[in-house]
Image (cartoon, rainbow, N blue to C red):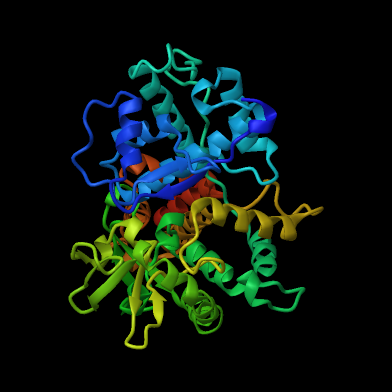
Length: 457
């Protein structure tokens, strides 16, 4: 491929089984077409509309995956193909180990808006599977993704710092961060979505939710939350990690920010995206009925697909991102709570990471309030956990002696349930960051034994 013949790749989606799919499948030696209907299958094509046949054969092999996963596969493959074409004037199947390594470094460090390691991991998995499929299909001699250690890591391996390190945001740093998100030094502009960003930040830091859980939160889940003393609670499941059901507790601190966003920014976003919704209705999951009391929602893709019914908390993530209702006047209303300005649908993980990075740059540029490069959504989950443990352990230390016959439950056990951790080992990481925890232990012992404390020599 010469520089004049450099291709640009795009992702399109099939509306039915096209002849091109069967022809391409034959070309890449797929012996049998998948039984599953390929409606909505991502196909990567160049600027002339010609499909990249190895990509198509690879995606057909994985066509039983969810639509959301296949969409991620298509986007990752098209991005890699464009990199290979623009940088090396080469087709993706001929990539070398050094070229793949440069792609990884470009995504993580060299491009204008680098992504986080945790966001690159799904891309790495797609490329790893793609080159393995090429090898197994005898289209290349050996995968260029070489193993780099005896432990099994390869050149696409990244250490997802956000999952392994506990990062606490100090009170001073958080105030600077939230001030930056609110736009304290500028006039509010609906196009910047300041109110949405503030609502998400306050929800993360006060409820300890994961980014996927917040970004796919439905308005009806907040509306039907049950008030318990000082918080409002509701259950989530499908959006939670590993589909583990747990209860979310929302404080008035977050609810007030959410309500302000819904009254001002969200209405504007929904109204401005009506034409786009109607033009892409066949790509949306249209609700036929929703019953908050029974917790059930039913609908179909594009109003013509098969009828599907779910518990609201069990509604799959790919549907949550594209679920809408249509009133009798034809007004399309997304059910997702937090929407992007440009599409009127939930933002991706990388989109939210860019938002947080920009807010951090505005808050901390040239200052020493925060030693880390930026505050991430997961940092706020860690911060919630540390704040919760600090408060609960302080309760235990200051509890009156007559109440000790009925001591508080172990804060770590409670926190494990709140955060949805599968093991106590995950939750115990937060103990390492509790300031002066050793002093708390000594103080609790002194309070318990009274005057006997200090008599031992």
